[in-house]
Length: 336
Image (cartoon, rainbow, N blue to C red; front, top):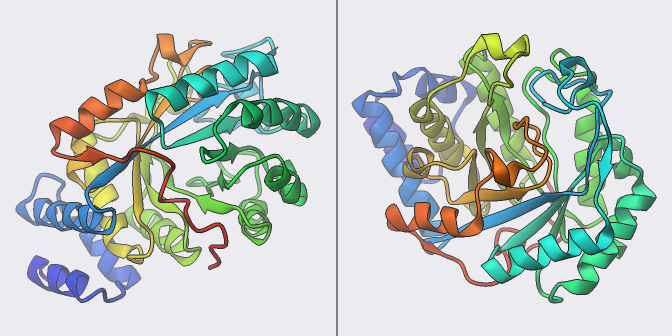
């Protein structure tokens, strides 16, 4: 299958096979063929979103050593990065969310570590919801324990949830991948639109693994899919595995866009960068507070980006940015 066949199949909105996805991922990232695929993905992203990129923003309600021991995460107990637990007040969390809203974020994510108390999370979230405009999109980024009571998230004012089966889940983490699948289903059944991603991608992950995960994300009709590379946490064993280039990241983002149904408007990349945007990413994140890819307690002082900084990235790549609530989460009843 040559690149002209790939483009033709894409423009006919035909379904790509696992073998075709693997073949696209196997192309050298710097090859002409990969650049053609990235150009096609960018065209699709611009078309389905009317050239309106989105900036989503995440705040963390707590920072704590996490027993789920995801080896790529700075929160993991095994990584011994953070030893103390910190919880921000509802007032502080609401102030951070309101600042994101003022800056023009299209959706605001409330993140907690995997074992954070749900009652406390809901208390903070209700205060945030009360302080935001009613139309502002609120997204939960929480552990699997929350899935059984997804309706409580809806009642607290959430429109969606971020949840992903991470690459080599159950091997590089202490989480059963089946449980992640069940959680995604529970969130959707409660009426929460689910955003997901192929992540965290490292040099060791095979094209076959990536293809399987791309196909899975396409199968659940998410609010958005996309891909994110793994950021090495200094001093950890996983850091020794290295990091993929932004160009490789853009290639994976592009292939993901070609495979997703056109009904999926969002195509994300993380961390923010111009190169993945060239591969069709139309969704990036700003962050404050704890960050699983950072060793700083306040990522805004470290790796985190601001909403204005991301808007500039999109502007430099000839994207407009949406004003108002997210359109990627406009369907609250997405079902696979």
